[in-house]
Length: 569
Ligand code: FES
Ligand code: MG
Image (cartoon, rainbow, N blue to C red):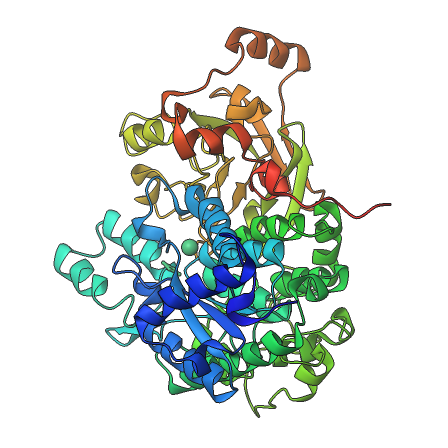
């Protein structure tokens, strides 16, 4: 196959003329023939003033370019969109598939022999890996890396597990305006991604486990010199891959690699979002993620990594304890070491090189886990026929088996308007239910699943209640929270039929979530509601594309037409 600038020539007449045109235009930027006559490594630029999680991207690009050139290839940087959690209206998830489509098409459209994607903030790595899986060009992922921790009055702070905890304390009157303002300046003390085991850290660990990034790439703090050297090394590897033509994502994203990723997702106490993203990535390949198999893995895989929100430490401590290679070493036979990596060999080489750090207590051995079971369980029942997810590692043990009266909010605005109403009829044993917050309902499946505890209940000292929704939850949140109820209420799911006063039973041990209402009564409510109509926000453009084609949470929330054909048999 043609390499470098000759790759994918469109024909404006003959091939020679097309290449002549390309060269004529690119020479406008001052390139020499020597530079242009080399294999090309594309590098995505996702730096944005709206994305502090990517604040180190310019430095990572510089280093990656250096690595590419030291190995004799030619780096070409190109922009793609950038998504930050807090600056993506209506939600970052709404935009994930747009970023995946755009990145895939720009990799296809431009002449490159390998590509480096640099991302980090929650939805970016999933979008880039979905794109890479579909484009199937040799790809090296460079995560931007986690922030270092913050400090406040002798206490270590983490974005954004402590954001919620401290804001709740402020709401309960325990933290005054001046102190919450001080905290605001200390929660995110550097560029990089949230340094707890939120979605960004989860996806960086999954990326490393899938072999799509170099060893230790998930955990090196964003501001550290080591991360710059990692970017340089990634550039070198990408240049080698541009010449050799592999490994391609299709060679790395095998059933064993996906199984390893699910093991690591459970063992790190990972974000529930990780399951949706991994499902979407798998659907871009011939392989699939099976929710029941994932649940079975969760019964075999303990949580070994002691990080917030399930545990105590932060990403930099995970790094200094040996990172993902050490975790895979501790997981032993739960990891298939024959899986390949962009580093060149297999995970066996990665694990063999894992550092032994005496006295570290962040990555536990299997006989002394943080939690004996994995982080997440998959629930089913008449309330969630196609499944729901609970992160029981971050829940209150006493609430995992619970029956209570439903207090229903029909939408996020309804919840916001009434949750703190002193007249709201709610008690600590009730179950808070949020409807219409799924992939189509909100839209974009916001992280609204962490319903705030009503102020008047908080004031009594109660910190957790059972909460159920078709929304997602930030990977940094804590509580007894049932998420991703599928099908969602806006797509005819039974969650939409719940009324205040109904009884709901959560049976985490039995993996059930049930609405204790007679089927005939549910049928009556369903016929009363009638069929859903397309909402005004979905009248045109990307919103309409999303509304009409987005899949449900159990299928990864990608657009249905982006899937690859599944494996036969
Ligand atoms: Fe970007 Fe948390 S806001 S990773
Ligand atoms: Mg997040």
